[in-house]
Image (tube, rainbow, N blue to C red; front, side):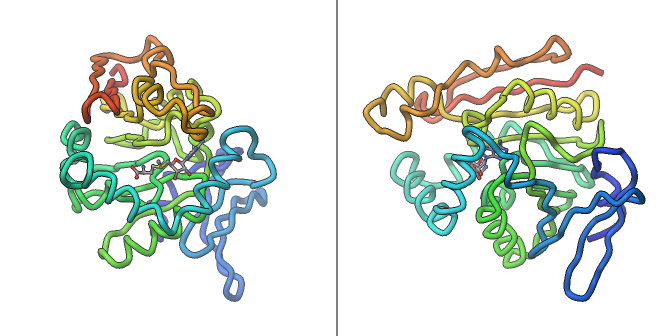
Length: 253
Ligand SMILES: C[S@@+](CC[C@H](N)C(=O)[O-])C[C@H]1O[C@@H](n2cnc3c(N)ncnc32)[C@H](O)[C@@H]1O
């Protein structure tokens, strides 16, 4: 992990973080003793005991299903759209990653989107589920892709202001405890002029599965209601036969 990448992260005090090793243990620490363990290459900014509500429920659920996630979503995409690439490109085609860009995926899960994006960029991923992040890390090592993985909530990102050229979140937004806070965080860490993309299931999709207990628990609101006035070029459309929405907007310069 390069110090240059660590410098983009933010402890609550705002003091710089440095990587330390004690025997086999690695951690990031500030000069006033804020300390974040790095386990299996994942930086843990999350105190599991402080996670509440849906964030807690979905963290537990994704930790449980992490092993089966990739195969099940791949099969689902195959049945629905003919291939995973085709399904993901319905939204990934709206993201432009230039060489050298700093890119972050919020609720990255196992990182299945990253392999379709320009490899000549600097990648970061945030998720609450350690199980999903571990799978992500294994996959990135297999695919020889470098990425900084952070365990944190979308509502409270341990990242400095105005850092990223590309910010996106796929499939996590409907789960967040506080989607309004998550949008403000995405805007905060984006450079001005950055395009932000959010995609997730539509209310229409949820109603189609109304008898499924899983979907009963997820209220789906139109994501546009969470956008503050500091957004420009707001575009919203339904994709994948109306099952998903994709919302893009820019941080005003
Ligand atoms: C359906 S998966 C999507 C994973 C990946 N983005 C993809 O497209 O395959 C949803 C992910 O959102 C994560 N998640 C849910 N609530 C979160 C929160 N409040 N903050 C960060 N991640 C969250 C879950 O742990 C899970 O990995």
